[in-house]
Image (cartoon, rainbow, N blue to C red):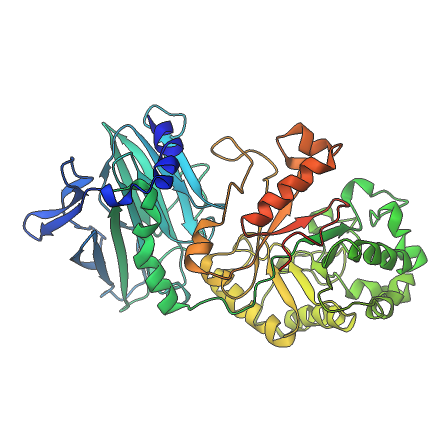
Length: 521
């Protein structure tokens, strides 16, 4: 049973059974096809030929056998006078039996049981998009097979999708898709692959196997080598100390009397100035080495879909109102070495012309007007003393990942002393440039029936980007555990925070807990 694969195998690893694993056999030729499996067992696939039909595109493939797998290189040419979409490239189906485990890389990473009989028969994700990296790993109790896709995404500027799904009789189809409509419930291909007239592109798919399924991470070594040679290592020094988040305004507080949704402790900064917010900040800094203020300009009221708002600092100065003292008061906040504070930049790449004003549109990073508007927000944050800035919704939902890479570089150039964190979970090549964000819980259960998104270390980030920084949002109100959710036992919450810290994350905590010792060097 697959439960044995998931539960018993960790015990085998502790017993150091790797040396007893049988050999992987990778063989084949153009005439006979290609095979991969464990010696003495039926192969994961046999007599596979990488033939592709791509309409008017010219597709040529070659296969290079390695000691524990093979590399398939595809050359795709468009010899026509018109742009042509690339739909897919074929991958071998895997004969692994009716029950397998497939690594779920859309969060921290863990083995997810898939069965022909259901309820879960399919794993799907896109990159850049829902997956951290363009990789898939499927395994049974005898073998793990890893598939990784390598192409210059920042040059080609398109997504890919990887799918593992039951095909019946113990066979699992593996699909590599580049354009076309996804199934209902799938993460979409936001930027499909289209080859311009006369263009030629190359894609490499590395297929590796491990005879001990616990060693599944080794099957992704070719991707790690390619990633590091293509993109490099992290460009920042990680800080894993816990972060205290202070939310100054909530939508459920909004009314005609309190349109900004300010919490009581903030004392209506729009009427009374920013001194009470300073008190909140100073109190939080006593308990945490890093503190961030959410909704520092309040919430939008007429157009609530804009929350959190793009104008996270300049709204302080609007109409000469009482919040105009925010920059000067914030700039006087006393810090010492090891203490930092910052601000959360709402909808950081969703531009609006003014606070609580439509239309909204993805930030045009080439528009002089929109660029200057964004830089004005950043400049005022820096002038106020912020050295941490969270980039809300900094995701492919609004901008392509290649634009996000360029934009984070510009922000960092403008603010070299600021640590930025991108929210939601960034793709691997963006994560190397700045810390990223992962919710401990999603708002609702996802495809596999759970809303828990962190179940251990961030496996792919640890593998690809040693020294990465990943913030873990401890949104306890979403927890499926009633004891954690109701907050009556703060000790339970603290234990959970400490576990997440021990996994290597920087916990972001919105509860009034002492956090100085968590994640500190």
